[in-house]
Length: 413
Image (cartoon, rainbow, N blue to C red; front, top):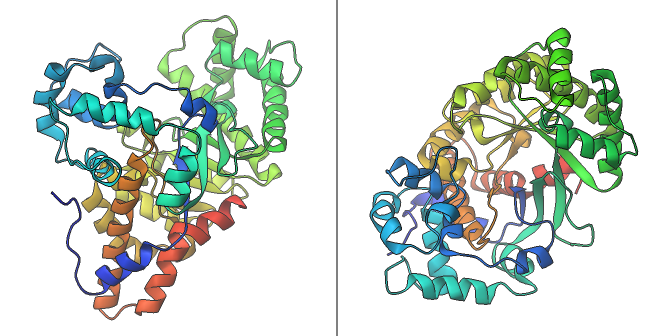
């Protein structure tokens, strides 16, 4: 079975052109070095985490409360897996896996007879050089922006680091204490002390090669300092925060992080939409934050799916807001195509970043995700060409800018 949609006219020409366009992968969660990746033993369940695991849970696979890791719930149990896989394997989360199976392992699906053999072959392929073989040689990816709580190995020629911002770590006493230790501080007894640590910590990360800090859209648009201080005292005492105080603390710290990021000349990446109660991470919550911080470049992730039109409008309205399609191509491909057809009319073309696979293990999936991204955006721009709204050469240049030139310039790569 082929997992490519047939394209017509200019879209097919653009898809063919895209195969030779270099790529900046704007968002991954892979181990910080190839050696750490090589040390992993991949189990069958690892192949489906993240994302397919969510579909499996939605299909009825019994996941423990609060647990979404397919590696825990499947492991190597075919009988637990098969009925739920049959319900989700034609969806967009599963499609990159099946493309990867074809490309790297010569099969297009898992069966009771082959699944453990496939896992063994994946592990056999996990040898030194796999980052280069998959990312550079097969996918044409020049650099990978890795998002985590720590920076990647600086000696890795492919990886660069997007690190979780202090706003993303402040609600954990363990993380606060670690940040303090990183900058040689004994700890933080007050919010002001933490803010000083936060600034010093951000400086340290940039000096160590960090190119971006990640945060999230937060429902508390205007943080309350009194509530933030109250929340921080609970954190310092190792207590759990109620959600309203959690929001105000993270939002307060995020404001300071934005100012520091501007001073350091690096952007903030901001998660929007998709997960769980996606209303809490809606892009509309960012409007005041973006307005208050015009000197901070905002790398807005995931199109705030399902509120995609708001994401387009935010990027259109604010010069410091940029549209990053990482993950979005496999969340809802047709939604991305429809949205980007509108976005071409509304958003300056230099503000779009085409791709970030957003995976952890079984990195061969990146190949499948990238083909889907190229198919989606070739469809979008091919439609413009076929309607005499853009020349083919202009569409090719736009495609190259979205996949490569725009993110390369934005991240200073």
